[in-house]
Image (cartoon, rainbow, N blue to C red; front, top):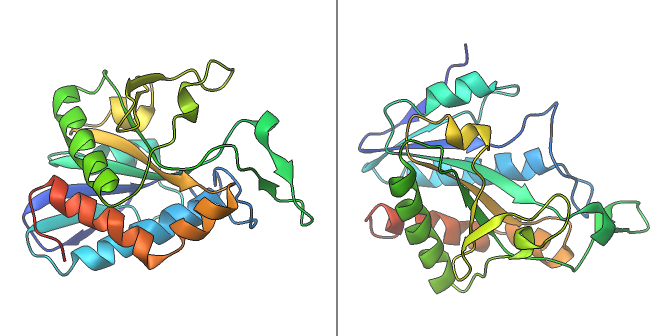
Length: 219
């Protein structure tokens, strides 16, 4: 059984690092794994949120091979679970640079997914809308490429302005025992997005969106 880290007290927020070091997700245009970016963003968020004693953070940040069962347990009795990911595109839209890393300018921006099979679907949607609205106000824009009518995509776009999709069978969402959404922070095969998601300024926008989402002033 994994042991998760807890910080301070107050609003109960669980941060799930998407993927593991063995199942590391997409590869970026600089050759890094999605798991690397997921870990970096979660580390930034948990470290920054230590400054605010109104939020208690639970995360699987220190667990290299966390199981889905442990992710579900992490969400028990929490106010919200956010699963942190970084995005790619379908194979036909990728080219390979001189280092043989995948890249594209086909899509960029963030995406948010929720599941109607989560028993707190309405609350999940409300949190997702508030979070995305804050990102929009900070100057970020969602990607709409997951709505395209092609194999591997074709996701129901619930809110075009906010970039919120329905993905009912995402395990971490439908089995969560708290409200939950999955957040794709950027398209790491796009060189512009890849540079942005590595910057503290970009990560700070996500942090501020979390604080505003739960009604807390910015750090």
